[in-house]
Image (cartoon, rainbow, N blue to C red):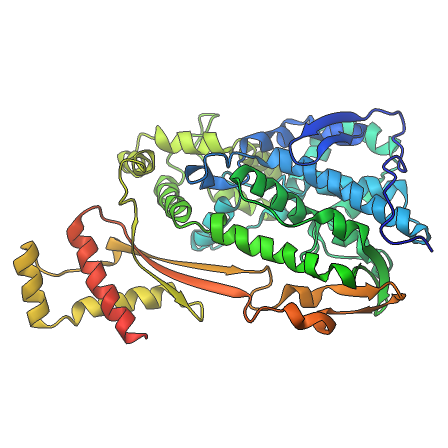
Length: 490
């Protein structure tokens, strides 16, 4: 049996006609792709990812955060192939075929095709406004849309892609296999480990996260202490309850913890940055106001919601909605709002444009750490109640100071709740990872044997009250109410 940690032979999976194309990636260095991947990369639908920022509006806080979904997708495809070849090199008995390597790489390449403008910000926006799409059978998610666009690409470029798929021995059955790989849901216990490469829903240890940890840290200017190569080198496929799964040597448990800790640190330092979320909230208000009232690049009304029903439509309607969706880049949507004929929409975007001159952009009035995730409507109602229950003396003092009655309205403020965890809510994600020892490589166990470094909690919930008005008087009203609310809940 080969030693776990052997150096990978990157030439073990040969391209049929040596049609590799090389990219110089800022994270992984020189990375190459075969003819099939290049056919997909060269489509306009994939090239659109160049215009989708990986980090949404975070560039407004971190000037270097301009990396995009295009380069991330290349990185995931590269790591998908690298990881699978590492496993094949260490365990020839797995009988991993070139065909499977190519399918996993294509799945990694296409896993983010469905991201909307501003990446995960768009996903949060679509969840927020789901009540406007009552006829929609299930919530919007970019994974489902990625598969739809992948299907759309295959149909649209059937003649160009068919020859390439045949060259790599990928038939219709294997195309369905690629779709399942993108979902990360195993359809076969014997090959379940293949579904843990791109999107590992069980533990969250997958190459998608490894790439964006490294890439985002690089562009944010944050030091990254996580090493994916160590995990790859000490990975092994074992049988667990009749299912072939990826396990890791017990000696790399600290690297596994660093994987999830890196995720938490990125959320604390960047992803959930208060200014980023405030700007995101303002853009959401503009999108809600502009729905179906601003023009797309083709001169028609932007359909911010209706296209999501494509999953329930006829084939020709799906093609139409996919074409419309692929027009929706960051700049296309943002400019449609910025230059809208609707004055209210322009005014909302102007708040973002003037964010550096006006520090009171949705200014934070109060900020608390809470044990449990509260309901926004309940918190807002409680703050309004605090305003209504002010004593006559307090109201009189406020009138003397500001020359106005104490009236607080729901539209004056927003409630923002940010929950940061290690990837599995309140649970320890490492408890879902299987480990093995060099003394018995086939014996597997979960993290319970190595819980000496386990933190006490894996989730942090922040509650903020944001003032939507730009006047000091409204801010002062909210401050008084928040003090009363805080006193009642401490």
